[in-house]
Length: 104
Figure 1 (cartoon, rainbow, N blue to C red):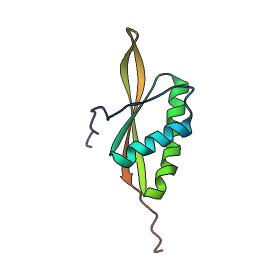
Figure 2 (figure 1 turned 30 degrees about the vertical axis):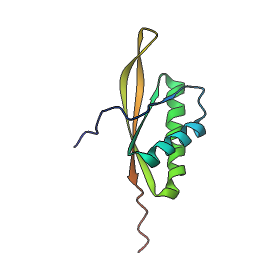
Figure 3 (figure 1 turned 30 degrees about the horizontal axis):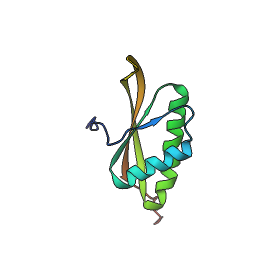
Figure 4 (figure 1 turned 180 degrees about the horizontal axis):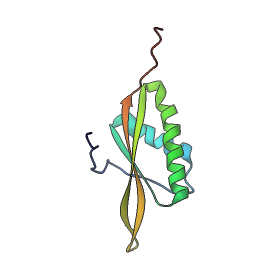
């Protein structure tokens, strides 16, 4: 299996527990209309929850453009105010939408 590229996407979308998932989804959809990959970064369970909801919402936003998404989660360390914290890095890549076969 080929591993996805692990270089940072241009412009990391940082998500907090207080982020509006619809707003994050709109930003994510905008990035993925222009670029093949995007990155969301979340620290903590609440932020990760909002980020995952945003990805699900972004899929619905991109459906009309015949774009689907795949997400690869991983851990990463980030430095905040001199302290190292573990974050969830959600690498999101666009794919062509696979519509069900209507010939049956």
